[in-house]
Amino acid sequence: MKMPVLLGISAIAITTVLAGFAVAQSTGNVQSLRGVELDETRPSDDVHKQIEGRMPRNYRQQPPLIPHSVAQYQMDKRTNQCLSCHDWTVAGERGAPTLSMTHYLDREGNQLDTVAGTRWFCNQCHVPQANAPELVGNDFQPSNELR
Image: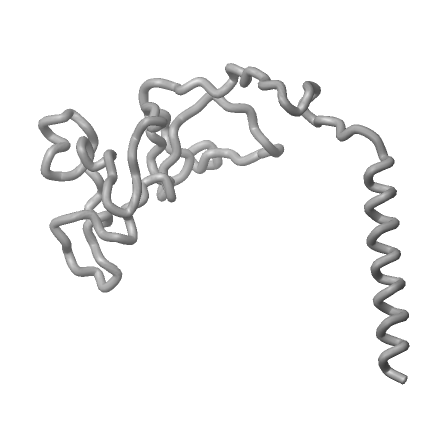
């Protein structure tokens, strides 16, 4: 009794899947949301320009924004090119800001001579300054303007 029921259900499922494929094939060409053909490249807009110089922070604990491009910087589990200028051992001679001492503390609060693994990937908190449009509406006001 169970075998004919299973065969019937399998036949209905296969028929439904095949009918779905037939409908999908007959719907016509796929339309691109970019406004060009799928195999064409489209130049990017020039709205995301790097802003030189330092921008002020909007709130007290905000991580500083990066005032230069980091597009060619290597950052992986073995290499962090940010440290070639910003590590405490070289920042003075490079004229770069030194990392906060909190970057040299491990999870237990012990002082380290090298950047802690929890602070290794700078772009977890720090982002480059860019003249980019808002992706969503935002009415945030910096804390110094609210006083």
